[in-house]
Structure formats: structure tokens, C-alpha cells
Length: 238
Ligand code: ADP
Ligand code: UDP
Image (cartoon, rainbow, N blue to C red; front, side, top):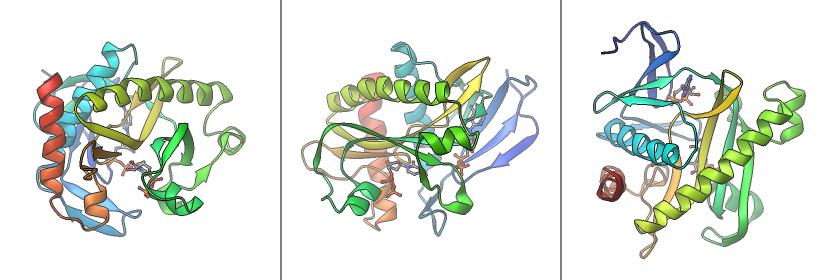
């Protein structure tokens, strides 16, 4: 049984602790919700429990489909053991439909279909509000090598194939989402989380939003929406 060690870091959604094994981290999922680079703050009751469940089930699904992730072992409702990665400060956003910042930036209506998948890169830096970058920025600034960027994007496309298909099978459109990768023994591995906090998930029939946009846009019923995602995923994978 793992023992929770030294507190290392508190982020917007999780706390990270060491364990007795230097290669293993203990992640605790909080209920804190933030949006607009931390400008909007709140709580979604039981969010930590729901995101921990969703992310662990999706990471297991990805592992079964040949995508290596940091997941070692869920411990309980809010806690999970993960492989400690040297995180790459480049967030990968994958888009299957127009929404959010893409809709705003290019003046295209939310919900518009895309002819293919769009991958965007953002520099993970809260103070700067995660600015959009391209591969040249990432490579020249030393945030990731050309090879790492290629690997992250190839993995993102593979992850997208698996997840679009899976969400479709539970009546959900995977509109867009954010991925974080890290280095381990020369490999690039999927880290952080995939949850209603980091994805846009729309019900296929009603187009109802089942994700953090309910919080961002003051739509209410956040807990119910996250729970609906948990319920559908667990019915299939739980
Ligand atoms: P943020 O830092 O964006 O506010 P969180 O509250 O989710 O986000 O904190 C989790 C932190 O842990 C993030 O900085 C994330 O990059 C980092 N992280 C996620 N998975 C791993 C891992 N396997 N190894 C090391 N760090 C990780
Ligand atoms: N996203 C995220 N963390 C971030 C930025 C974006 O999880 O720091 C997710 C977000 O939930 C959405 C997708 O990435 O599913 C695309 O986000 P977008 O660029 O549209 O930004 P937003 O308008 O959501 O801030």
C-alpha cells in the first residue's frame, strides 16, 4: 500500500504529493473550479470524485488501445497513483468541432463541423494565460524538441480516434479537449487528466453541454452534467 508523502504542488484542480517511490506521484482531485485563467472561481460539488473516475476509466481505455499513460492505480474516490513525468509545458488542444476560443478567434459559429481534426499548441503558463504558440516557438524556446512535438501530435491523433469513437458509443460528441504530456525514460507519455474539466462534451441528441462550459457560462447544473458523463462512461467501462 502506497503512503502519501511530502506535499509538492497545489494546482487549480489537483494537489500533488510524493510517495516513498521517487518515480511515483500521489494525485488528489479537488472540487475547486476555475475559469478564465483563475479569474472565475467556484466549487462544483463532488467534481474531484467525478473527474478522478472519468480520467482513470478513459486512461485505462487508452492503455487498452496501445496509448501509454501515467496511470498506475486508482486508490480511492479522490486519489490516484501516477508515474512521475517531466512535464512538457506545451498543452495540446484537439478539436473535432468549432467551439470556445476557436469560434471566437476566427468568427465561426460554435458547433460548425470541421473537415478534419485540428491540433493547436499552447504554452502552459498561468501568468500569461496559456498563449497559443506554434512548433517553432516550442522548439526555439526549448520547451520541447522537434521529435517530442511530433510524438505528442501523433499520440494526440491516436487518442482522438479512440476517444471520439468511445464517446460516440455513449451518445456524446467529443467537441474539443486538452492534453498534457511528459517525459519518462526517453518516452513521451500522456499525463494530467481527461475529464469534463478538460473536454467539451455535448449530448449527441440534445447538444446539451456536459462539461465545464456549464460553469464558465453560468448555465447551472454542473454537478448533474458531470454525473451524467460518469454514469454513461461507467455503464460501458466501469
Ligand atoms: P494546473 O497546474 O494547471 O492548475 P492541476 O491543478 O490539475 O493543474 O495540477 C496538476 C499539475 O500536475 C499540473 O501542473 C500538471 O502539469 C502536473 N502533472 C500532471 N500529471 C503529472 C505527472 N504524471 N507527473 C508530474 N506532473 C504531472
Ligand atoms: N482546455 C483546458 N485547459 C486549458 C485550456 C483549454 O482543459 O488551460 C480545454 C477546454 O476545456 C476545451 C479545449 O481545451 O475543451 C479548448 O479550449 P479553448 O481553446 O476553446 O479555450 P476556452 O474558450 O475553453 O478557454
